[in-house]
Length: 310
Image (tube, helix red, strand yellow):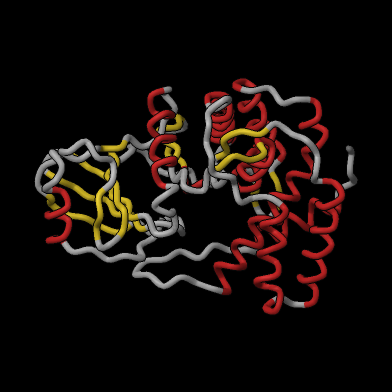
């Protein structure tokens, strides 16, 4: 999320005049996330989230809107899109495509419990099951080719130790990662700040704009690495709860279970690289968030010390 494009009260009044959502009372920028600009907007008829799309192309954006609509119709908790008075889901604001969503109740579980991990695993499994056969033409950018390209981009900024570690892991993934696994629609960024809870019940999955067609197992590993790390290491109880919840909705195949350690490493490498890139090449904005890349370096290092069981 974050705020890269500033808007004024007058601009919001003009924008919301094309909706039947009441008079704009007040608004504030949302600092969570790193890709799009988001505002909480309170009107005389309710509370909403306004999103200005900063990184999704105009050609790809309808696919994400259609995906959110499909998931909502199938009762997966995610933001409900509001159409304007001409039944259009998108309008221009400050030269950017923008959309209005109902504000989802709840708050992020920044220190998740066992129950939170079970719940997020369950709904990730539901997402993967609901989208089996769903035609989503955007390929996820979480694969080895993306990691190699990002490594080349930031290579000159790295220490010799980090450069050696990343290069060695890329070689490992080249040898072990190219295994045929179930593919489908993945969230791609289901971190703690992209889910809301009321108590320990999930109320909403957020920020599907990193979604794409990719490895389902990698999506689980991405989620587990964030939700289950605690004090610099993976909490095995939380990890077991997340996987248990997931398999209620979609049981893992034997090959996926065998390949799980490799995908945990791949997910740690991928987000270590992306956070390094954000740190080295920060985007300007009024409110921006930098996330610590060392968390994923530490996880990758720990995974590499564990014996391979596959």
